[in-house]
Image (cartoon, rainbow, N blue to C red; front, top):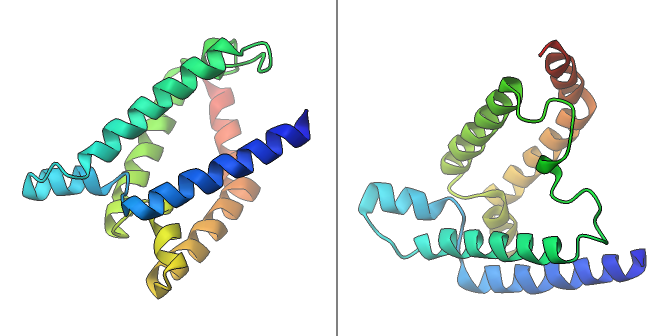
Amino acid sequence: MTVVVAVSTLLAGIVIGYLWQRSRSCSITGYRDFYLFRDTLFMRTIFGMALGAFAGYLLFYRFSGAMVDFPLFLHDEPGAGSVATLILALVGGLGYAFFSVMAEGCPLRQHVNATTGSGAAIVYLIGFYFGVLFFRLIVIDFINVFMRLF
């Protein structure tokens, strides 16, 4: 079963990545262009992602026997629904939005730009992955201590 999941995930990633690269879209530029220029062209990306997330949710809900703890937010998790969780989610979302706008695109767009040879996107992704490593090795421990306080 795990090989089937791994192969299907790989195939879905290849298809989604190909379609994303062909569309030259980004999850953050829709908001930026709408706010700055009132251009709604890339807002279709936002609506498409929301529709895809909803369809994925329904699909996984239908096959919930394979994923016992899906969706995670409906189960008793430590800190679920607490003020600390809300604060951490808001800070993370605002940081994601701010740094994506400053980098002229979301991490997915930076991957697409890196495949076309953009040096700035490659440097962004190197920093991105070092940041992920730093978060996993150091920051997560501080967040766990913070979550135990509430």
